[in-house]
Length: 273
Image (tube, rainbow, N blue to C red; front, side, top):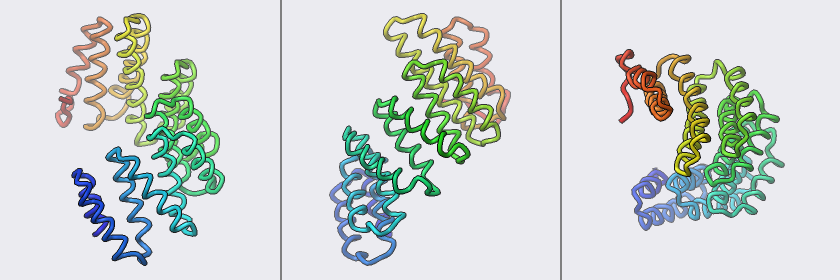
């Protein structure tokens, strides 16, 4: 309960109260076997709130204090790597990641842990490193449940880096190998949105042909989500709306109108606002 108090104050932006709650947690529960996990949750909340210095402090505290707790070391190393990436401390991030992979390459949760680190690199503008980690994950854990997101992350990194042919190969592999995965529509949507972002960036720089090519790639995938997967209140309206946007920019107003109107045929779905 005490860790929940701290997490609530962090979420509310009341940092002085959060620090007081954490101090009380450390004092009252110093011998509790649940303390490492509680502090890990607090550090994760700091990350969620983009307070990476605070997150790093508590991840490192857990790592040094409970170095004989294998689960704690695993999650703390992941947290140290992510926090350092987001802070731009790439050498420190690489050191933590190297240790994580050396000590836990066969750990049950290693594939999703690497996926989250790769996503941090992607968010920090380090697409080449994100690509490297996604490729590493697919090579080492191709059957992991999170592989659909690894394919998606790999494709997004390839798109950012201008490697469209590679991205198309990755997308085809994702659609084939993850066909039964329940997260496949959301993963495809993420890839489509990366093409869409590229199109908007090219458009802003008056690169009309590049923008049109990226829009066509995006709308192909929005159509897959809208037309080929079962309707979903979370996914289908977004895909239809964005497909409509792309067709409108491409000058195909008939298809644009059709996709804007498509969710109407599903009474339980509504267009995003």
